[in-house]
Length: 282
Image (cartoon, rainbow, N blue to C red; front, side, top):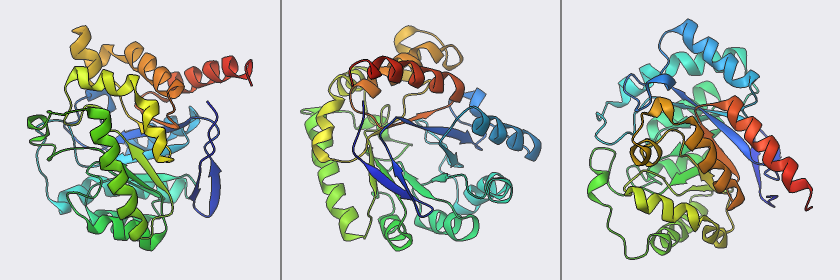
């Protein structure tokens, strides 16, 4: 379970020798999981305090829904959605690492310069706005690049693979080169569970996740309450916590360094139990 990777956040070197928790803070009105949506200053402030108190390492703030078929909103509306949460975080928790979930260079740069965002989380891996790589490199921030084909509006039309793990490995090999050219020191890869992938693709990818370690980059996974759980089990996102914990446990055992979750306390408990078990073999 222990890894050798480090990343630099706010001038602090972070060792990823234990799984880290990235908590989702959705400020979109149309996220696929209704329970993750927060609207209004009081509810947002309460949710942020809860996330931090329950043991999250980082908060990932997103104002653009990436669910299949989501509306393609304007950069201005994305800023309007993000600003209240980013303002609360910058004012009340200035040292807490904040990730901005966006594929737009303009939004990333704005969040960094105005609110001191510490991480860029890009669902498109630089495909939708290549300049976002330059923003991450210029500011010397960790950059999370995800695997996706197409856009959130049409990605489920692009689910044909010869060998999904091989194809994704080649995709990330190219990303490693682009990130290096852009001056990015800390690249984190996200295989993009649920993005341009069929349900069986997701489970195959999870079972072979360790093969991505050949890239020698930290792996982030996000499967929290996703359709690979609730469609397979014929339940709702609201009933998908147990499946989420199971999948993230498997991901950790298969080499993931970071899990992106809606439910922080259960994730922290799961990590503690897995780590305690692992200690017996170290």
